[in-house]
Image (cartoon, rainbow, N blue to C red):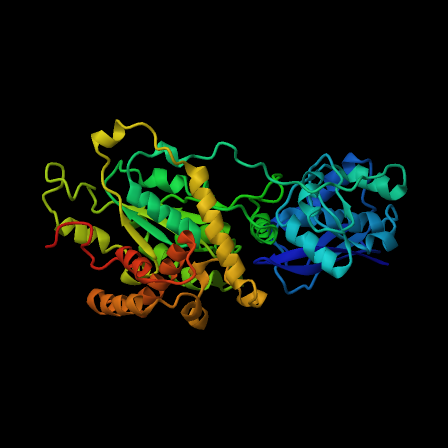
Length: 511
């Protein structure tokens, strides 16, 4: 007799069914695990043996073979512990085979038979619902799995509890969906004095989902402005929350928080490697750009990042996805992010202050800014200077307008965009103006005659690329949405053009 239990493996955010087959036959006592397991899966033999021993059960003195099919697919992760244990218990006659066939199981076993959290419960739950099976998962993640509405979920804390449930001596209650706690201590724009131009650019970036680069001397408030962006962004829609939470579940960063409700804000250190930013590594895990999907990726001290890591962001910023190709894996992760970056104008940071600037100015500025390639600069919609705050501004009382008022305007602008694109097919529907492209952009952001003339002249004078031309149109469309205007006119085109970067030495005196 072969006992069979279903579990899952992950290829990016794609879920693959794995058939765990357990056979107990005659021969010398042995416990063999086959089917291309990695080290964590191979070690499950000892965890399962110890967990069964904690329940007073011993493996029979037979030749035990556990096969993870399909056998040519690499099996990774500790979530195979629970299905292997359930397969053994089914083969031993402890659990009913007919009932176990209707469930997908995943979970890690502690040596005392507790079932501990693992990565990937949410996508596994959605896959089980589509396949018409129930789900057995750790108790700590039952609230995560419960978002697959209509799914039969068993979330036991221990292996003994699960056995008692199937024996009828204990009944497991279905878990309730859990939402992550909302951050009630979000930073407020009232904390920032002065920097009105930068605040305007931040509001514009939030309203249209545009990429933003802030450049200025140390202490000007660039990081403070970026940290307050989440406070003016709209919350995730239900479908977006599910999409983002699935990525974090696969990455193992969701924990016991439940479904995310706020947009991710990721701020990796400038020492981050290419795999850390774009994804990859031995197990092809999602990188920071995927963990920031539908949220914000903040890169402080932009020129200090590795050149290769920054160049790897160019394609995801255009396509909204990142493909990780390795010898043993080829996976694709969603990566529709809003890039917010900050940098000093030169290495010392004081290019515009003769008293503090180094003796190599302005050459040091050109060398420092040259660390960022032109194609990456071209993918950034908004370039804004953030000058040092004067003593007069610091002595002023806090601004009257805070994040709540700005967030209300951003929400209204986003609502106009949602209504504008609502009639399009779902797979081609932009979420924000920053995603509009091609013929759609020409239709929704076509400027009036004066605006078109100004844009044509500016494109020639500023040497804008075709990408830069279209990004000006997207920004102008968002400016019109913030003003509640239906058409894009010359004033919006003019303001959008002020945010385009022109020359490598823009943030300092010309050589």
